[in-house]
Image (cartoon, rainbow, N blue to C red):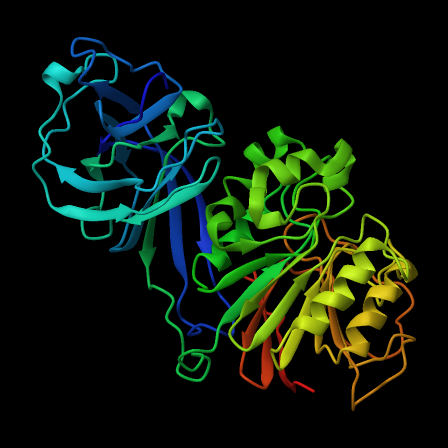
Length: 467
């Protein structure tokens, strides 16, 4: 959008085109808690600008919100075909992927009573009044990312609704309009039926962070939609173990496949790259999409702390040999950590029983460094399945004293792979269920729980103490 971005965004929720999915049926939630979620896209959207009071922007690919000059955008959706009580409604908007789209204040959302405005008729001079209840607000927003606001109090069933989004910040934000295409157009997700509720036996104690994710995620299929729906109901930090998008990790694939599903959790994601991300030279699509969250562009390894845990995200697509820059960095990073528990994630597994990809022995120096510094957990992907191994040393021997427990979690959404020869110390396996691995990171231990896609029953859970 030319000029600065809009202060006030007006969203009218009217008839929407819909896709339906079933949300969360797993051992983490009450068995009867099945809910139907329908995603609607706008029938109209536009913005207005008080520096051009008679101009209509209904065909623009952007929606601006800003304080100076004041800009506001409108969305119109029609909710239809929804049966049963609405238990949850979320309004999702996607920031534009251009410089300046980010903002320290993403906008304040309010209901409006007028729903008769038209996309090509609204200007600053005749815009709807912002006269409804406050629904929520967005804080800092980054470029090329999904954000959502809970509008459950407003969207109660079939009908036409109108919402206004505003900001008083002079550094506004730009969002994608419906004209930008279905991959990044605004969404209204309406859930009916019984809302999933966490049971008392699986609620993590206060202060124990949740670390949840998978690898081998987004393509043109529906697996990533199913696993993203699981993340919608699991709080905490999201991780990925590579091959975030198929087939080639391009900017377009990130926008069309990853963005509408796992992309709505981008702000809380700590990724790692896979070989398909590197099918684009230098994995530029991956580094551009995740930005600073992926570490230094072209390097791809970084670390952070989560509660009592030190987490290291590594890059198995570059040199990992003993003495390499990455291996030396890893040893220095581990030596500097004062946390009692350590986990690492990367794409290619050292231990796997998958038929498609053999164990990646080139990762052994990284595993050795982690073992030398008493790490506890390794997460990988690459083979499109789930597998859990007993704690092992770097040569694959069972080690119940200092061994690292490792998981292959390539169940994020890409088509399933089968198993071949079952490797020693493989304790649990599944090759026909999409799902995520939820880890609860306690001060001296971790719990794991494989959460399956809706409609599937496979589960795996347990606890391991830190060294």
